[in-house]
Image (cartoon, rainbow, N blue to C red):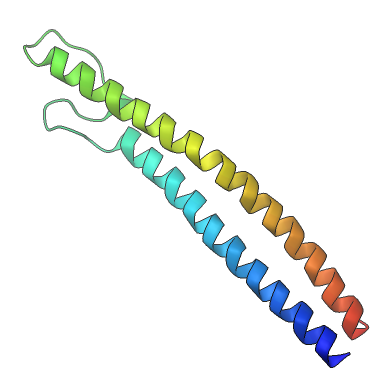
Length: 107
């Protein structure tokens, strides 16, 4: 029983570490996407979330910068979606592992 318990405990701990790493990467990706949208990119242009096109001489540069930042935010978010799915899957596996560990200990 002790060998079985130690083996399942190590499996559970490794899955917990994977869940923490994948969750951290997912949240970091989401925060990066939010930063790309809400942080001012250029002193003259401001933030893409609150950008309103104007008729001044930097309009083309500001428009291209805003499009680039919003496109980058969408790309980062789309890349983080599989990580979010993996995060959810590892959390479900953690719950199964916890039940199996409790079954071995008789709780």
